[in-house]
Image (cartoon, rainbow, N blue to C red):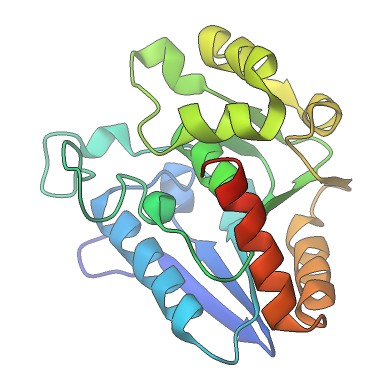
Length: 220
């Protein structure tokens, strides 16, 4: 996205808010301005009394290719080396009061995998791929991946992904418990929004309390 251009769009449909990463020219890699827009979009969602469940989706056939390494050294570089404030990928340090579902098409890799792990559930298209691809570039997981992956799939499987950086298919992700649903190609957003609408139909106070209890119970 050029200077001043929005690289994050928000679509509200009743109780479901869909946050869309819209940088197809960069395979939805997240630079500093995009991270800030993502964080603000989820703050707005959490504060909106009419919004019950959010979906995070990447436009153009890719969920997110991670941090935008081309922005390093520029004014659009992601924020790093700070202990307070938003994470380098944006919302990755936030603990929202309401659930978020990742709708994954194409690649959810490196920081994109970390964003997917930050979400409460992951709906993955049958040909989509996840992986710690930043391993090959010497870039660390600094958006919660080293904590969330073991919490989600166990230490042994997490170490497999973290140490090898290998790609993981939708079927293997489902077997691992990393993906919650596998859907046909091109259907991730629709299926995630349908799931979000279903969850939004439950009485919210109890659902949110149980969700928060589960998250804090595993130390996240």
